[in-house]
Image 1 (cartoon, rainbow, N blue to C red):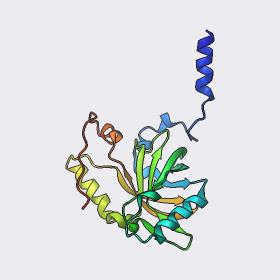
Image 2: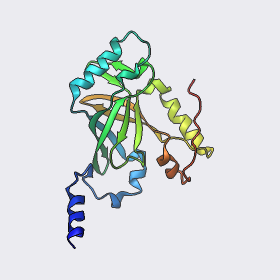
Image 3: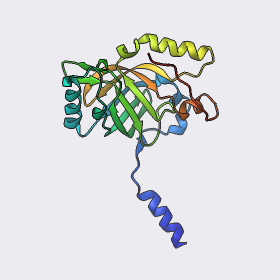
Image 4: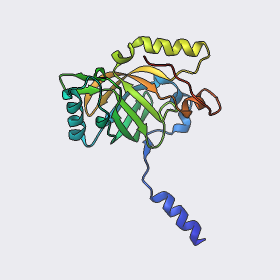
Length: 199
């Protein structure tokens, strides 16, 4: 009995890494539909270090993004649905190989971001990217993913979404990573995933 009490107290002593202000079991179908997402808000507490990292990438002489600037930062991802919101802890880093994944705006520097949720998921994706749309030919990428799905190919969930990073607003391309969750969403057994050559 003492061991059972100890296990239960240990389970409830760990911090909750994701939370929603609605009962998720009441919205199972709605949570699978990207059109129910209004926007995504990313907050990186170490915003000065994040901004310095982006500045170093822009001022670096190389035309591509040096791997030394791909450090992961702890942060939170808040998703606003039409019926409520969910908050997730996440690891975040700059995404992309080339500097077209960064843009200067009046408010600061906007970049494509690679997101790894530490608990929970968005549209069943645990890892995804928020890409500057021009880096993937904008709506052409969305159209391509839709076309592949209609031809019964497995394609990553891809759509345009309004987002903000530390208060800097922009429009991004949400694209899930090619991971086991993508196979599960498409009712496939885990196995090898072959991707096209980007070049």
